[in-house]
Image (cartoon, rainbow, N blue to C red; front, side, top):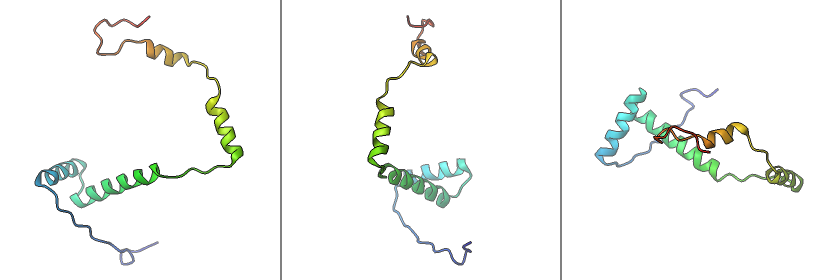
Length: 99
């Protein structure tokens, strides 16, 4: 396990408008975190999302064929989903279900 002495830290410096810093400080405070911890966590989370979005999925020709068979197969309606789609939205005033 790496110790604190083994950990290498690399500073990152940014120039931000005062309004951005105020927003970051407010959000960090709401989370009970320091500005540094909050910004680091947000930046790492955003970086992970970008890396995951650009990831390449590899599979064999047989695996791809099996995948396409499943994706292309006919489906049966799910009664609960059909019922949900027919319900009126909560903001609709009539309060009745669609036919």
